[in-house]
Image (cartoon, rainbow, N blue to C red; front, side, top):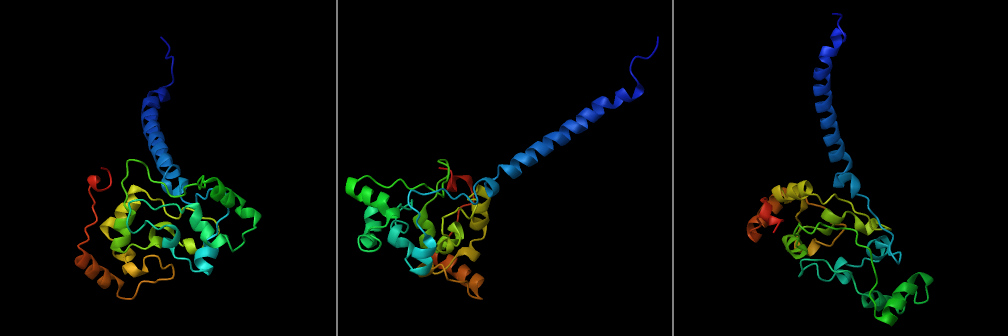
Length: 215
């Protein structure tokens, strides 16, 4: 009886096995690469109801972060400033600007501004702003050079691996608590030695186990 299939067809299962494994690895690598927060979240800059410039307010005018985000030192979450905080200045400055009409309407109606959140952690991740501020982690470490941003954009992935890198070695990110909101602060030459001493004095022990952030 004549042979129906050529001899090379005997190698098809081998090719399928190797090709399937390679394809699976490529799929996993592609999902990890293209769906990582490094690529999906970094650079996110939603359009806000009012174009608020951090470059102007923080970088040029020197407004301290805590003037608007007043709860960062005492609360787990950083607050979005209420309309009245904006109007503390703008009832005199640019009071007739068309760009500020939504803010004036918010004040008149008592309805809060619907600012769009930029930095957002999933519900299963616990993060306490006050703990990090009191430890001496500068705003710029997580939010980037926000004093130079015309439109606020997410500068870091805020992923689990990114957080763990800091928890395992926080020394590059620590500074005196009085300098936490200072965007122009630069680490001194003895930064590592100073940070080690600060860790010992404050008894800092950033958790690296799951329960530290997943409670």
